[in-house]
Image (cartoon, rainbow, N blue to C red; front, side):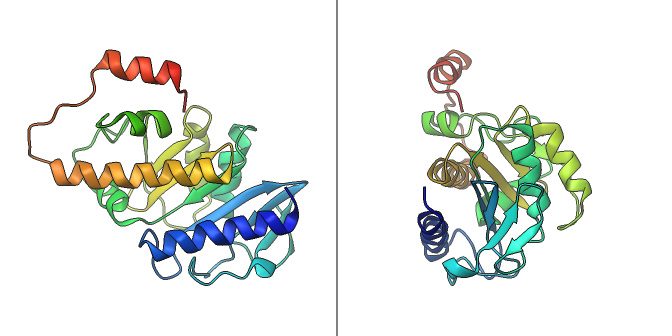
Length: 210
């Protein structure tokens, strides 16, 4: 993928997310692995008003070498990449329903959302809850490393989801599936539910490893 195509891809997906209410203000960040480093959305930027030419460029050592200053959560992205070389993109959102679930006191911290749909199991898999750290706290990176080797989707407590994928499209699709499932989970709380069985989940995970 050319540099210009990579930049346009980030801007296109970010703008789509903004227009559909998956981000607000200057929340959220996206990164994409490129030759010898990464492209990232800049700090304080809005997904609805990104300039491809001003995206942050980091080298393979994480040094800022071009564009505007990177998101202050660049270390979070690098922690995800560092645990699994197959990851090519990372998307982090403060999407409403996922954040709402992240502040609930009675969720299973080992796997926050139940298997309500096949596509959630296929695209997200298991979703652990990472303990709370303030935004920008480098300790969050250490916490994320403890999970990222086994999971490509994480929910940061009182913060929001972060999802890695083998492509930018895969990461975006997965985080949107997570947000849709979080909304469904909140809508159904208190109602009798028919979740997928353990056997159904196992078959999906075998056929479609997340």
